[in-house]
Length: 165
View 1: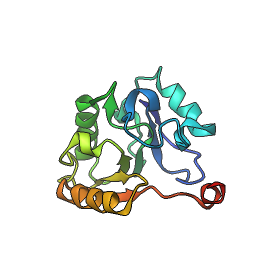
View 2: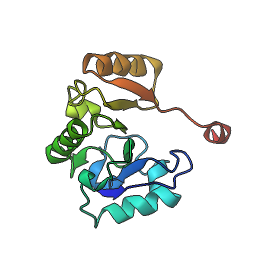
View 3: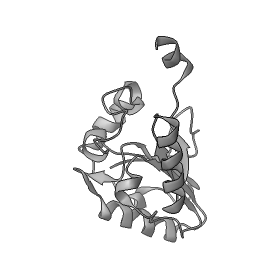
């Protein structure tokens, strides 16, 4: 994991810390965006994803003055196809030690993880990323994510992608 204590990310702002994991090592192979338009495999996000492969940063590197942390700007909560319990434990410990810090992230691996391990920690919010798909599949995923304790974020096609179809 690569930790950037203060991002210069135009979407996040300059007072937010962010973490980056290598897409190849941490994302589920079932993700429909893997090698098929994933933003983390292109441009600037890819640079951070690639750099994370040789980094072993820890969340405690983030300065106490930082009050917002975006987890998994690239990558996910897996390690070589398995749920990364060490990473999940580290996130939980960090969140509990920094109750005044808002922490959020997204996971495509929510089905593999199962029950949301962060759901009882008030300052952390992990969203289940729900892929493009047929409406009945999407509806079923939304219902399942709620049962597992996740709010969801739905992946939709951008206007640019829609024009190419």
